Amino acid sequence: MRRSKAIPAIAVMAGAALMLTACGGSGGGDQGSGSTSGGATSGAIAKGESGDTYTAPKVNDMGAVVVSTDKPFVAYNNATADSVQSYNSYALIQVLARPFILDGNNKVLLNKDVMDSVDVTSTSPNQVVTWKIKKGVEWSDGAPWNCKDFYLAWLSESGQDVKPDKTTYFNPGSTTGYSQISSAKCQDDQTLVTTFSTPFGDYKSLFGISDEILPAHILEKQTGISDITQVTPQSPADVLTKVSTFWNTGWKGFKADLAPASGPYKISNWTQGQSITLVRNDKWKGNPGGPSQITLKALPDSNAQVQALQNGEEQVLSSAQPDPNAASSLQSLGSSGITYGANAGLNFEHLDLNFKRPLFQDEAVRKAFGQCINRNELVDKLIKQVQPDAKPFNSVIFFPGQPGYTDNYSDKLIANPSTAKQTLTADGWAPGPDGIMAKGGQKLSFKISHTDIPRRKQTVALLQSECKAAGIDIQDDTDPHFLDKRVSDGDYDVALFAWSVAPFHSAGITTYQTGGNQNYQGISVPAADDAFKKALAQTDASAANGDYQAADKAIAESYGTFPLFQPPNMWAYTSGIDKAYFQSYYGALWDANEWQKPNS
Image (tube, rainbow, N blue to C red; front, top):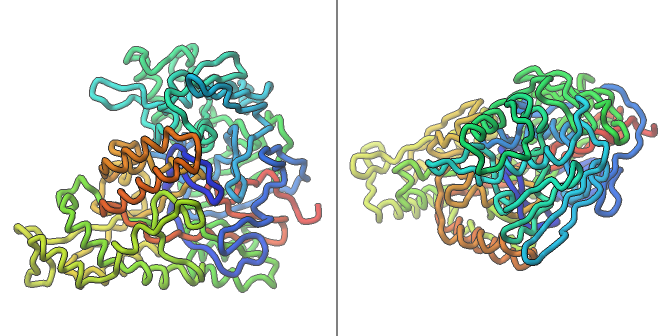
C-alpha cells in the first residue's frame, strides 16, 4: 500500500499520501543494475536527467515489451483513499504527466517536457508558488493539459470542502500540503498561482508525484460543469456532490473514453485482474519512448515470473513481493543472459492495531503483543535469503541512513513472551484452561488480516508461535482483496501490509495524525499531532527533522503500530533490453520510455 508522499535517502521535507503495496524482498546477488544496500547506481540514473531537471531523451524503437509484477492495476484515479496503491502507480508513471519526477535514487527532477518552471515567487506575507506549464502539452484525446487539471487536483485534495457532518465531499488519500493552500488561481491557461496559509517546504511533492493530475475536461463533460475553476470548496452542496461523486468513483478501473493520457504512453487495453497494455501516446510532445508497446502483467507467484522470463514470455521481471526461491533462481541465471538486481526499497512492512476494537484500547494488550514479536526471526527466515544484510526496521517516518533516523522500537519489540505475560498479568489478565489469557470473560484472541502473499502467511505463522507462549491467540485472516477496500474501511483487528513512500517526510502525517485520511486504524497521539504541525510550518529540512523525530518517538510510545522490516524489491531482465531498475516508488516502468535494445 502506498503513502503518496514520504522519504528518500536524499531527503526533501514533506509530502502527501502513502501507497499500499504488497511489498516483498531485496538485496544480494546484484549483477550490475542495482545495489544490495539501496545506494545510488548507474541503473538508477535516468538517461534524460541533467542536474535537477529531466527531458525525455531520443531513443531507438525497440518493439513490444512484456513486464511482470505481483498485483494488478485497479484504478486510473490513484488519489482516492480507497484506491491509492503502488500497483496503479507502476502503470501510471508513464501515462500521467507530472511537474516533478523521481529518478532511481529518488532525486526530485523538474520535468522539462511539460513544465517551464516551478518557483517560490514570494515568501512574505505568505509563501507563493507559481507553476508555469509548457505551452502545447496535450492529453491523448487532444484536449490541452493545463491549469484546469492542476486546479482540480487542489480542489479534490484540499480537504476544505467540509460537509455539515464534518466529513468532506471528496475522498482523497491525503490532504497534506494541499490543505495549506489558501488560494489556487489560474492566472492563465499555463500558470497556476498557489498561496499557502502557512509555509510548506515540500511543495514539490504536490501536483503529480502521486498521480493527482487528472483530466478536468473529462470531469466537466461528465458532470455538466462548464469550468471547474469556478467551483470552490465553498460551492453549493449540489455542485460539490456532483463533482466529487465522479472524482471519487468515475475513474475506477479504466474506460478508454474517460481516461486519456498526458505522458509518453496511453492505456490501450486493460484486462481486470490480469494485465494493462500501454502504447505510445501520439499527442506526446516529448521524444517518443523506446518500446512501441508495454504490457504489464500481474503474476502473484514470483516463481511463475521467473519461469516466464526464462521462457521468453516477458523481458522484465519486477517484484515487490519476491520469494526467496525465486531470488535464488534468478541469482543463478547470469550465464543465460539474465541480469538480476535487488535492493531495499522505500517501504516498510508493519502491523497496525485497530484502536476501534475495544481489545486494543487496552494499552497492556498492545504493549504485550509488541513484546512477544521476534523481528530478528522474521528477518532471518523471510528476508535474508533475498537481502543478506537485512535488519529490523525501527521508525515510521525515517529510513536508515537519513538524518533523523533513530531506533524507537528495539526496546519495545523485545521478543520476550515471559515479559509480555507479566505485562498482561499486571493488568488483570490470567491464563485460562487452554493457556490463553483472559480478562472479564474475554479471551485475548484476535485476527491478523493480510493479502494472499506467501511471506505474509509465513509472518503470521511465526507470530502465532512466538505469542502463544505469552498466552496470546492469533488467528490468520488471509484475504486476496484485503487492500482493495477492507484496510481503508478499518475492517480488521490487526492489519499486516507495507507502506510505500516517496521522498517527503510529511507522508506520515496523513497516516498517523488524528483524523488523517489514511489513518485507517484510528490511532490518536496528541504529542505526534503537535510535532507534525510544527514540522509542516518549517521551511528548513534540518529544523523540521527534530519535529518529525518527536512525532516518530511519540507514535512508537503509543504501541499502536509496529514496523517489522523493509521488504526488498527484486527485478531481472533479459539480454534483449539495455537495462531495467526497480524504482522504489514507481516500480520498473519509471524510465520505460528510455528503454532500448543494447548497443542500439
